[in-house]
Length: 148
Image 1: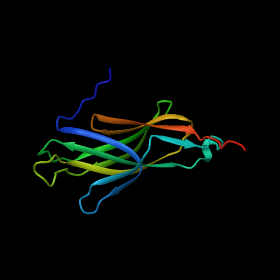
Image 2 (image 1 turned 60 degrees about the horizontal axis):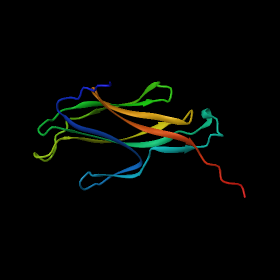
Image 3 (image 1 turned 180 degrees about the vertical axis):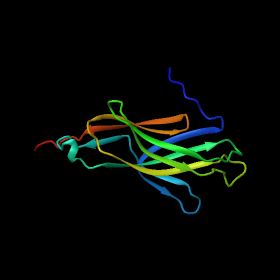
Image 4 (image 1 turned 180 degrees about the horizontal axis):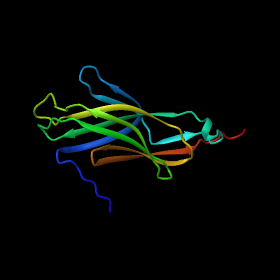
């Protein structure tokens, strides 16, 4: 059984992969365009010649009301063979909410680049201290057009 120790002051953490994140200027609310969980690749191109596939991530965390603290967030790629690669680390500043009645936290938009070596499912894991959220990303061969 896999057990995760959740910091006592963390209410929730999530990560979403998409093509684009738009942040509203007026209120900072994010909008996500085209959620990504499957990517079609040209399997005829050798892995060493494939271009990186860019994925935007929106990482959100909320802490208990009244908690105002900094933290470090890590983004790892877990390859098909289980190999783990640290892609990014980010120091998040104090996270107070502008509203006393609302939980503080952060919305972090970042971008990662993955060059698919094989078809199959990899995982993007985002961690904050001892808490991790994992999302799958599956690379499949592109369907060839039917011959006429």
